[in-house]
Length: 243
Image (cartoon, rainbow, N blue to C red; front, side):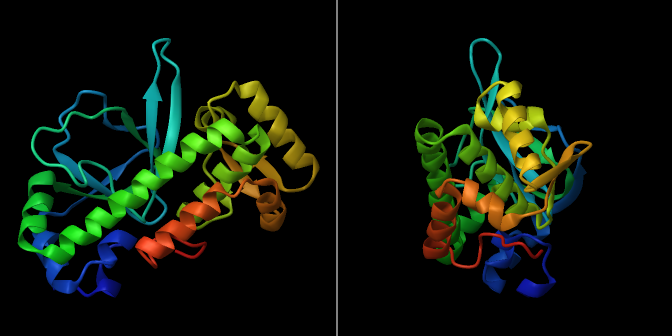
C-alpha cells in the first residue's frame, strides 16, 4: 500500500486515505497522451476516469451548431474527468480533450463506483471534488458574462500556470481565443498589450510569463474565487506554482 508521498503526482489521489487508495490502486493504468488528443466526444459512453499527473492538462469544450468550440474549464492534477459522481450509462456531453500532453492514470468507472460503495470517506472526497468542479463551471459562466477580454485572458493564463507549475504556459493564441469564446484577433491584441507592458513574451506554442504580479493585476478575481472554494471544500488539493 502506497502512502500519499509515494503515489503518482495527482493531488486528488494523494488526498485519499491509504485504505481508500488501496481500493482503486490495482485498477489504475499509466498512459501518455499527446496535446490535442480526445478523451471523449459528445455521446461517447464514459467508461473510464482519467487523472492528469504533474503538468498534464485536460479541457472541456462545448461545440455550437456552427461547429465553433468554446472551452469552459481546465482540469489538472487537482482533479479527474469521467463520471465522477454518477453511475450507470454515462454519455459524454461535450468534448474532453488533452490541452497539455503528458502522463495520466486511467481507471474503469466501475472500480471508482465500487470504491464509493465500499467507503464513505472515498465517496465524500469525490463528491466534494465534484462540487469544486461545478463551482469552476458556474464561475466560468459568470466570468464570460461580466469581465473584459483582458481580464479573462490574464485569468486563463494564471489558471494554466497554477496547474502546470511553470511560467511557460502551453497556450497558443488560438487556444486562448477558444477559452475566451472570442475571435483570435481580439486575443492577439490583448497579448500584444501584455507583451508591450513586459508582462509576457511569446514562444512557439506557448506564452512565457515574465511578471506574475502584473498579470494578476490585470486578471479578474474568478481564479482566486475558485482557489478559495477549493481551500474550503478540499484544502490542499488546488495546485500551487510548485509541482
